[in-house]
Image 1 (cartoon, one colour):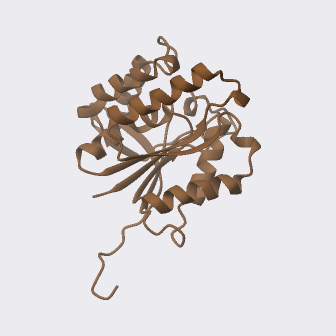
Image 2 (cartoon, one colour; image 1 turned 60 degrees about the horizontal axis):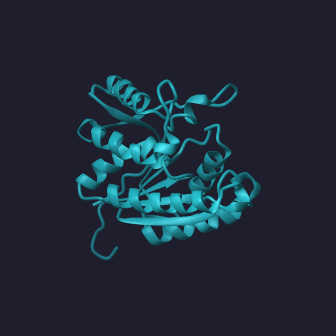
Length: 229
Protein backbone atom coordinates (compact mmCIF):
# COMPACT_ATOMS: atom_id res chain seq x y z
CA UNK A 1 0.00 0.00 0.00
CA UNK A 2 1.28 3.45 -0.92
CA UNK A 3 1.13 6.38 1.48
CA UNK A 4 0.37 9.45 -0.62
CA UNK A 5 0.77 13.10 0.32
CA UNK A 6 -0.64 15.80 -1.95
CA UNK A 7 0.59 19.30 -1.16
CA UNK A 8 -1.96 21.95 -2.10
CA UNK A 9 -1.05 25.63 -1.73
CA UNK A 10 -4.80 26.34 -1.68
CA UNK A 11 -7.92 24.18 -1.47
CA UNK A 12 -8.87 23.20 -5.04
CA UNK A 13 -5.27 22.71 -6.24
CA UNK A 14 -5.43 19.06 -5.18
CA UNK A 15 -8.43 18.34 -7.40
CA UNK A 16 -7.40 20.52 -10.33
CA UNK A 17 -3.89 19.10 -10.41
CA UNK A 18 -4.32 15.45 -9.56
CA UNK A 19 -7.87 14.74 -8.43
CA UNK A 20 -8.29 11.75 -10.73
CA UNK A 21 -4.97 10.28 -9.65
CA UNK A 22 -5.87 10.67 -5.98
CA UNK A 23 -9.21 8.95 -6.57
CA UNK A 24 -7.36 6.13 -8.30
CA UNK A 25 -4.98 5.80 -5.34
CA UNK A 26 -7.95 5.55 -2.98
CA UNK A 27 -9.70 3.00 -5.20
CA UNK A 28 -6.54 0.89 -5.14
CA UNK A 29 -6.43 0.92 -1.35
CA UNK A 30 -3.72 3.52 -0.82
CA UNK A 31 -3.70 6.01 2.05
CA UNK A 32 -4.06 9.56 0.72
CA UNK A 33 -3.28 12.61 2.86
CA UNK A 34 -4.13 16.20 1.94
CA UNK A 35 -1.82 18.99 3.10
CA UNK A 36 -3.29 22.48 2.74
CA UNK A 37 -0.56 25.08 3.01
CA UNK A 38 -2.49 28.35 3.32
CA UNK A 39 -5.55 29.68 5.08
CA UNK A 40 -7.85 32.65 4.58
CA UNK A 41 -7.47 35.33 7.28
CA UNK A 42 -8.86 38.82 7.91
CA UNK A 43 -5.30 40.13 7.43
CA UNK A 44 -5.28 38.78 3.87
CA UNK A 45 -8.54 40.53 3.02
CA UNK A 46 -11.23 37.96 3.81
CA UNK A 47 -14.27 38.63 5.95
CA UNK A 48 -15.47 36.20 8.66
CA UNK A 49 -18.30 34.89 6.48
CA UNK A 50 -15.91 33.92 3.68
CA UNK A 51 -13.50 32.34 6.14
CA UNK A 52 -16.21 30.27 7.82
CA UNK A 53 -17.55 29.20 4.44
CA UNK A 54 -14.11 28.05 3.30
CA UNK A 55 -13.62 26.03 6.49
CA UNK A 56 -16.94 24.25 5.95
CA UNK A 57 -16.04 23.65 2.32
CA UNK A 58 -12.74 22.01 3.27
CA UNK A 59 -14.61 19.62 5.57
CA UNK A 60 -17.09 18.84 2.79
CA UNK A 61 -14.36 18.17 0.23
CA UNK A 62 -12.36 16.02 2.63
CA UNK A 63 -15.39 13.84 3.34
CA UNK A 64 -16.48 13.67 -0.30
CA UNK A 65 -13.05 12.63 -1.55
CA UNK A 66 -12.42 10.29 1.37
CA UNK A 67 -8.97 11.53 2.34
CA UNK A 68 -7.18 9.42 4.92
CA UNK A 69 -6.04 12.57 6.69
CA UNK A 70 -6.15 16.35 6.33
CA UNK A 71 -3.22 18.47 7.50
CA UNK A 72 -3.06 22.25 7.78
CA UNK A 73 -0.14 24.67 7.93
CA UNK A 74 -2.51 27.67 8.22
CA UNK A 75 -0.08 30.10 6.58
CA UNK A 76 -1.54 33.33 5.15
CA UNK A 77 -2.89 32.87 1.64
CA UNK A 78 -1.25 34.98 -1.10
CA UNK A 79 1.52 35.88 1.34
CA UNK A 80 3.89 32.90 1.31
CA UNK A 81 6.57 34.95 -0.44
CA UNK A 82 6.69 37.26 2.59
CA UNK A 83 7.59 34.44 5.00
CA UNK A 84 10.98 32.84 5.70
CA UNK A 85 11.17 29.69 3.59
CA UNK A 86 13.01 27.87 6.39
CA UNK A 87 9.95 28.20 8.62
CA UNK A 88 7.67 26.83 5.91
CA UNK A 89 10.05 23.91 5.35
CA UNK A 90 10.08 23.15 9.07
CA UNK A 91 6.28 23.15 9.30
CA UNK A 92 5.90 21.03 6.18
CA UNK A 93 8.57 18.60 7.34
CA UNK A 94 6.54 17.95 10.47
CA UNK A 95 3.67 16.70 8.32
CA UNK A 96 6.01 14.58 6.21
CA UNK A 97 7.41 13.04 9.41
CA UNK A 98 3.88 12.19 10.54
CA UNK A 99 2.57 10.79 7.25
CA UNK A 100 5.82 9.13 6.10
CA UNK A 101 4.66 9.27 2.47
CA UNK A 102 6.00 7.02 -0.24
CA UNK A 103 4.61 9.31 -2.95
CA UNK A 104 4.50 13.12 -2.88
CA UNK A 105 2.55 15.30 -5.31
CA UNK A 106 3.49 18.98 -5.33
CA UNK A 107 2.77 22.03 -7.51
CA UNK A 108 4.96 22.95 -10.47
CA UNK A 109 7.67 25.33 -9.24
CA UNK A 110 7.24 27.66 -12.24
CA UNK A 111 3.52 28.32 -11.67
CA UNK A 112 2.73 32.01 -11.89
CA UNK A 113 1.20 32.14 -8.39
CA UNK A 114 3.92 32.89 -5.84
CA UNK A 115 2.20 30.67 -3.25
CA UNK A 116 2.71 27.75 -5.63
CA UNK A 117 6.35 28.65 -6.19
CA UNK A 118 7.15 28.87 -2.48
CA UNK A 119 5.18 25.73 -1.60
CA UNK A 120 7.02 23.79 -4.30
CA UNK A 121 10.39 25.01 -3.06
CA UNK A 122 9.58 24.02 0.52
CA UNK A 123 8.18 20.66 -0.57
CA UNK A 124 11.30 19.76 -2.51
CA UNK A 125 13.36 20.42 0.60
CA UNK A 126 11.22 17.85 2.42
CA UNK A 127 12.13 14.99 0.09
CA UNK A 128 15.80 14.51 1.02
CA UNK A 129 16.32 10.79 1.56
CA UNK A 130 18.45 11.21 4.69
CA UNK A 131 15.70 13.21 6.41
CA UNK A 132 12.61 11.56 4.95
CA UNK A 133 13.64 8.09 3.73
CA UNK A 134 10.07 6.93 3.10
CA UNK A 135 9.74 9.11 -0.03
CA UNK A 136 10.25 7.05 -3.18
CA UNK A 137 8.52 9.22 -5.81
CA UNK A 138 8.08 12.96 -6.17
CA UNK A 139 5.83 14.30 -8.92
CA UNK A 140 4.84 17.84 -9.90
CA UNK A 141 1.27 18.39 -11.06
CA UNK A 142 -0.13 21.06 -13.36
CA UNK A 143 -2.79 23.51 -12.22
CA UNK A 144 -5.02 25.16 -14.80
CA UNK A 145 -4.86 28.97 -14.46
CA UNK A 146 -1.36 28.78 -12.95
CA UNK A 147 0.86 26.31 -14.84
CA UNK A 148 -0.52 27.25 -18.24
CA UNK A 149 0.25 30.95 -17.79
CA UNK A 150 4.02 30.59 -17.43
CA UNK A 151 5.80 33.03 -19.76
CA UNK A 152 9.42 33.09 -20.92
CA UNK A 153 11.96 32.88 -19.40
CA UNK A 154 10.04 30.56 -17.09
CA UNK A 155 10.32 26.83 -17.77
CA UNK A 156 7.20 25.34 -19.38
CA UNK A 157 5.62 22.27 -17.82
CA UNK A 158 6.96 19.25 -19.71
CA UNK A 159 5.19 16.10 -18.49
CA UNK A 160 6.97 12.77 -18.56
CA UNK A 161 4.60 10.70 -16.40
CA UNK A 162 0.93 10.04 -17.15
CA UNK A 163 -1.83 8.40 -15.12
CA UNK A 164 -4.94 6.91 -16.73
CA UNK A 165 -7.92 8.46 -14.91
CA UNK A 166 -10.74 7.55 -17.31
CA UNK A 167 -12.71 5.63 -14.64
CA UNK A 168 -12.39 8.59 -12.26
CA UNK A 169 -12.79 11.61 -14.54
CA UNK A 170 -16.53 12.03 -14.04
CA UNK A 171 -16.11 11.94 -10.26
CA UNK A 172 -13.26 14.45 -10.43
CA UNK A 173 -15.44 16.86 -12.39
CA UNK A 174 -18.30 16.32 -9.94
CA UNK A 175 -16.06 17.03 -6.95
CA UNK A 176 -14.71 20.18 -8.58
CA UNK A 177 -18.19 21.67 -8.56
CA UNK A 178 -17.88 21.87 -4.77
CA UNK A 179 -15.44 24.73 -5.44
CA UNK A 180 -18.11 26.66 -7.32
CA UNK A 181 -16.70 30.07 -6.35
CA UNK A 182 -13.34 29.14 -7.89
CA UNK A 183 -14.84 28.00 -11.20
CA UNK A 184 -16.08 29.95 -14.20
CA UNK A 185 -17.60 29.43 -17.61
CA UNK A 186 -15.41 28.23 -20.48
CA UNK A 187 -13.00 29.53 -21.74
CA UNK A 188 -12.10 30.39 -18.13
CA UNK A 189 -9.28 27.92 -17.36
CA UNK A 190 -10.82 26.68 -14.12
CA UNK A 191 -13.98 25.45 -15.81
CA UNK A 192 -15.26 21.87 -16.06
CA UNK A 193 -14.97 22.09 -19.84
CA UNK A 194 -11.30 23.11 -19.67
CA UNK A 195 -10.49 20.49 -17.03
CA UNK A 196 -12.04 17.73 -19.11
CA UNK A 197 -10.37 19.01 -22.27
CA UNK A 198 -6.96 18.88 -20.60
CA UNK A 199 -7.63 15.33 -19.41
CA UNK A 200 -8.51 14.30 -22.97
CA UNK A 201 -5.40 15.96 -24.41
CA UNK A 202 -3.16 14.32 -21.81
CA UNK A 203 -4.89 11.03 -22.53
CA UNK A 204 -4.24 11.38 -26.24
CA UNK A 205 -0.55 11.87 -25.46
CA UNK A 206 -0.30 8.51 -23.72
CA UNK A 207 -2.92 6.30 -25.38
CA UNK A 208 -5.68 6.70 -22.77
CA UNK A 209 -9.15 8.19 -23.02
CA UNK A 210 -8.32 10.55 -20.14
CA UNK A 211 -5.19 11.14 -18.11
CA UNK A 212 -3.44 13.47 -15.71
CA UNK A 213 0.13 14.49 -16.48
CA UNK A 214 3.04 15.05 -14.16
CA UNK A 215 6.70 15.81 -14.22
CA UNK A 216 8.49 13.01 -12.40
CA UNK A 217 11.10 14.76 -10.28
CA UNK A 218 12.43 11.77 -8.38
CA UNK A 219 11.96 8.01 -8.36
CA UNK A 220 13.77 5.48 -6.19
CA UNK A 221 13.34 1.74 -6.59
CA UNK A 222 14.60 0.26 -3.35
CA UNK A 223 15.38 -3.40 -2.86
CA UNK A 224 13.07 -5.38 -0.56
CA UNK A 225 14.13 -5.45 3.10
CA UNK A 226 16.07 -8.51 4.17
CA UNK A 227 16.49 -10.15 7.56
CA UNK A 228 18.57 -8.03 9.84
CA UNK A 229 17.96 -4.81 7.94
